[in-house]
Length: 235
Image (cartoon, rainbow, N blue to C red; front, side, top):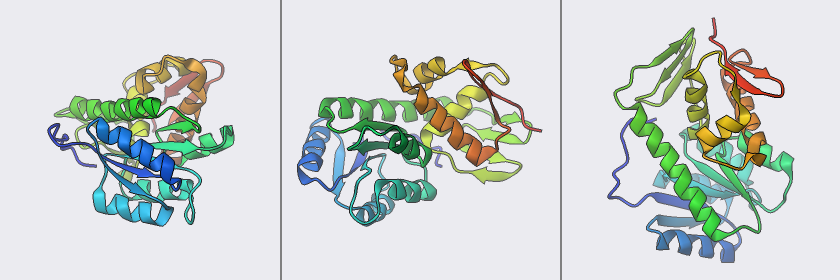
């Protein structure tokens, strides 16, 4: 992950991955009207190639795609480099949503959705990423046992091995690491990391915690049932 801050005079690059042309064109038109540089991909394989070629600042990704589905696309692009992803799903199925978050999506919307709401989510997610990059400049690494969090470079290592995190996973980890062993309620994490006032999305927090445990080890984050989560200092 680069520690170079984005040039705010250059339009943010958005890749819209959607096989329904009417939806893709409407989303692209709205985002272009708001000053973003937008490209559209109509299937999963094209999307993976486009991410590698364009290196977009954010991806809007439909789950239901011909060829590679959105979940596999998300896995592949996150393995290459962390990139913010907003996932779109046609089904209000909690399992789909949680799996999408687990493979690296940062946010999601269920169809039919408001294009205005999607544009707002895009702006909010980009602001979060840019805020974290600015906050991490010239900051010393956080050292917690064998866990190293390099804020300036946005890199994480456990026992010397680098661990690739999505932008939201990284922000959640930094938030927990800033108060080691303190139990932070899920609602507070949702408000402070995601910026959501609506507490109905607390399962989003759960899914990202599961992803962090899978990548960093089950001993890193402790669950306090009915309350929230705490980062434990690994040995």
